[in-house]
Image 1: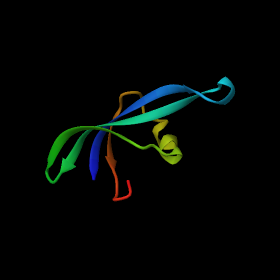
Image 2: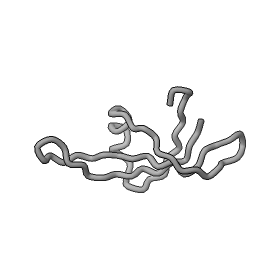
Image 3: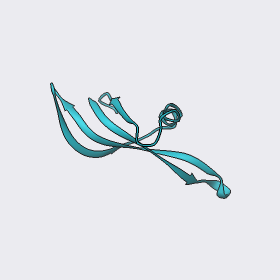
Image 4: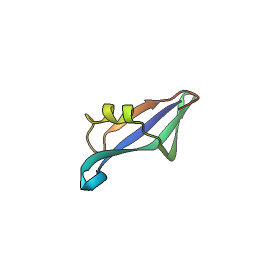
Length: 70
């Protein structure tokens, strides 16, 4: 499936008060055949995905493609 999503960057306080970046991927639309349908959901972000997202700015729009296992 293909999704249109927005990257949300935020500061997160970690162990012993250290700060780190955290990411949310807010889904705005999903592709159904030739059409895009508005939706709202959050995609689970893994550590590998976070490494890739470091180059995206807050509010960046991205296309996300997932398989059956997301």
